[in-house]
Image (cartoon, rainbow, N blue to C red):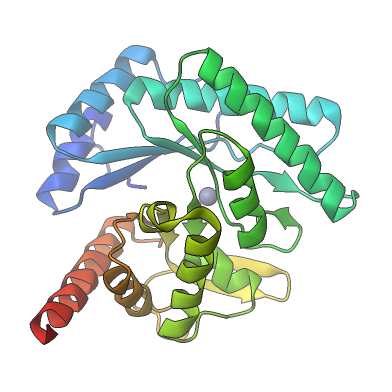
Amino acid sequence: MFRLMGADLPDVPRLLREEGLDALEYEAVRWGPKPQITQEHAEKLGAAAKENDVRLSLHGSYYINLSGKREVVEASKRRLIASATAADWMGAYVMVFHTGFYGRFEKDFAFKTCLDALKEISAEIRSMGLRVKLGPETMGRKFQVGSLEEIMTLCQEVEGTQLVIDWAHLYALHQGSLKKTEDFRAIAEKVESRLGSEAMRSMHCHFSKIEFTLQGEKRHHTLDEMRYGPDFRMLAEVIADFQMHPTMICESPILDVDARKMKETLRQVLESKQSKV
Ligand SMILES: [Zn+2]
């Protein structure tokens, strides 16, 4: 995710590249049932991304509940399909989204509703000829559908999905777990055993520091705020050890500054491991 004051959208991939960055998540988070970008504009962005070798993803609408009442699920499906359509125009490889809420429903029932809805969306976007993958994201609040287990099940059961792990959300949901490198390693291993090595290595990640309450996620923070976690260096160790090649999206309040810091940390970790061989 990236905002540059006054920059035209098709210029953003070049500006990112000049900063040494190579991934951009386009935010379609306030969209309703229709794409809020023209096909022409989306294609321009896609061409600029290609030219500058910047990987595009799209974050779909926040107004989604695939575990709600029938009308709510239907409206959510239309919004996700609009996001997927625009994602395809720009050549984004994944449309990331938040699946929904348990609400008054039993957890298992809410999850099953979500799973069925996602299968229908997957079938519909394939029948429309869209190539973008569906990326349900791990969520940070107790009332949200989207624990790691649930997201892995969705990836297993629904065709055309991409694993999306928001490490800050995992950390917040589990009240500050991920304290040691081993905690990150355990998650990579769990994913590998459920979804295979390639799904683990190519996961789409969101990362920032985060503040939480008993209910989970409260607020994202910058990497320099020492009193919050998790620590990116630990994830970088695991990325190096498991030869992962994740797409890493920084979600801190200072996006590109922290994204550059994360890239530099990863470079240092990879270098120090190489010199040990
Ligand atoms: Zn998200």
